[in-house]
Image 1 (spheres, one colour):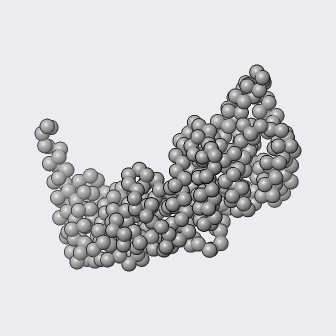
Image 2 (cartoon, rainbow, N blue to C red):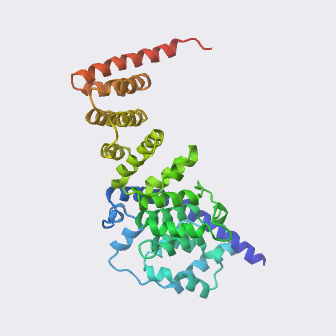
Image 3 (cartoon, rainbow, N blue to C red):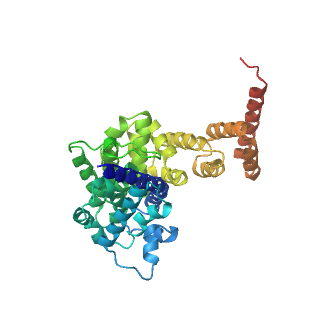
Length: 382
């Protein structure tokens, strides 16, 4: 019994190391997911960005000679590592953590699908095998996303599960939505308690948000938006993160149009501000066929929310895309605030602005912003 207890502690040490490594890896994969949806509309072939970015999948493809995966050897090595640390109580090294992932690169999806049986045959307890399931989950996404989600659940790391299920939502939102619906009826229910506490940042789990996002991604033109309309604050921001992560970029104008017609201009603006690819979202705003006044208001709010580094490009877009006769107030509002908070970068942008009405308005607003900043500095403290 004592040896088993020490063995479980060793499991926790190795899994903790893996979790910290996976946190970094999953952050990159989430960006890949957003980039994939930005580059492709639904129905197009899967892009091969993995090859360019040196991901594990690319590493596998690049190998000229791939040794055949042997579950028996892999599980034997896995067990030996844990047993060594259980007996020596020496904290595992990075290479041992990498082995769990790297040696699975040679496994085919069919090999991975057989892992549960192989693990049972090897009599490895779930607490020990969880690291294998957690790493194998992403390798099953192309072949069997449902099984990939089940592996992620067995792996017990919520961040991995969310990456896997969001990837499935982006590829087949209807199937993912149906599976998520099934999880609401399980006993015990699928929630944060299903997963292990981890050392790194842990995302919350909101099944309702995921189901809503999958439904919208499946049918941007006709999906039920009522659940989205009822949300506010942090819950709304979290749900929009899910929606925008899995929604094909070319469907964004349809969603913007529907939100506009629902009478929630604040939600329209929030979508644009929160989109992971702000410049692309602004371009799609032009395709949403909004009423002129609403388009102008949304464009102004979105550009005004940009950070100083992004403002030059944002304002260039603003001047290209909005009605010169209607943007004077918005332009001055944006430039005045910019001049007040970051006068140097604002001045550099002004120098490049062509002569004309827009430049005159911007220069006036810039001077007003500088004066506002001076007034704040000399005003007595209250």
